[in-house]
Length: 236
Image (cartoon, rainbow, N blue to C red; front, side, top):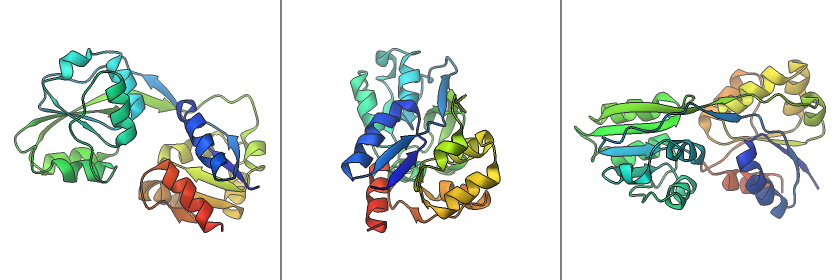
């Protein structure tokens, strides 16, 4: 049984572990992203409101009443984000076919010309979404709902990494935090390069490459379950 290290926030660890164990992997949990609320909610006077994560949904609805969003067209970057909104009493109007910032822009570009668009997300969001909406003729406002910081682990991260054979990264920030927390960055890079590294999306792949880590697989879709399944297939 091969051992996989995953670095997702604690709120995502349980479901990710289940996916991997169902595929026959042993899992080492090393959460590297801790979300912290900024105590803000999205603007409620916009024509469209975009959510890009379940964490963002949770923090947003801590600060605004679902009824305040009813006049807006609610957009979720993917089905999990849409599910989180629905569970908290917000009806979802748009989920793109491609679950990414580019997918959101593509699904909305003909509808947002001259419209006010609220983007409610983390402070680490890429500019692709904002730039794409601006290029489509929207009036864009961004609210940073939360930020992600590295944890303060009570264990040696280097020792844990050395026990894994497969490493799955789902964001660029995750890669940065891993190397920031490493006691010996060269050692950690060597362990990663000797193992199998999977990335969720081209930006994460590019970050790994820029930081000296080769990528063996980039998932064909921006879903953890797809990354896990394609890793299993790649390893036979």
